[in-house]
Length: 306
Image (cartoon, rainbow, N blue to C red):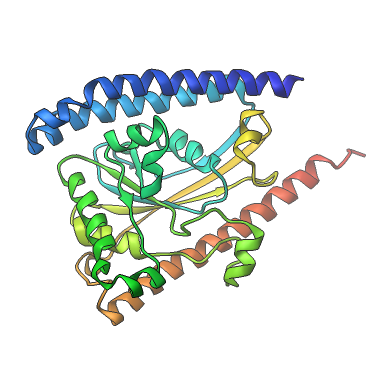
């Protein structure tokens, strides 16, 4: 009964939060069509980012009010809310998005996620993401490109065009390298060499660096662990996530990776993928270590004193 009440309160507060801040966004959005592009970036973007930051702060507020989650967080001390960051994380649940927003809000610029083009049709949220200049990705399968060769490279152009908007003000671009949430079936189907991760897809990151690599000061590599098992969004709303572990490290981006041609230069692509693979190997080891550490702590807490 308590869990149902928690879910009702959390869902209600989430809904009210969405309606309030989206309404404010939609009232201001028409101004973006009136002002010149530069004016939009210099005048309206800071206003929209402030609204988004307040939205996330309110999310953190209802989360604290309705959840008893223990947060174990370690992140760099020198994060800059006026910097440019590319942010990536392992991906297990829709809860990951709430976790990352909660942990990083106010410490770096508002997170803008790479989204599939189809998500722009999601009622209210799709229009809000568009208003906030989230980069929408339109990816084509190999079979589609075989039938429509004229579309080759269009997805790259879309990514670059989306990222070029971020040159004018501090921005954090977020991308889940795995491209999808980790599940046992996906892990098995991929025959992933990683124990706790799917294979990383580095194309989106490479295209973003090519578009504005001189702006990104570093890569923020985020690792999320749910010691009590991967929660669904419903689990979170019911207050069934007792602990979340987050580890964030800042990784310098090699200058050469901001200038190469990922699409056509085979050698560059191999070097870039090798760099990402090294990061992924370290992340896999870190997840394993954090899980073992949690098991040891749990075992000690259940040992009765003599």
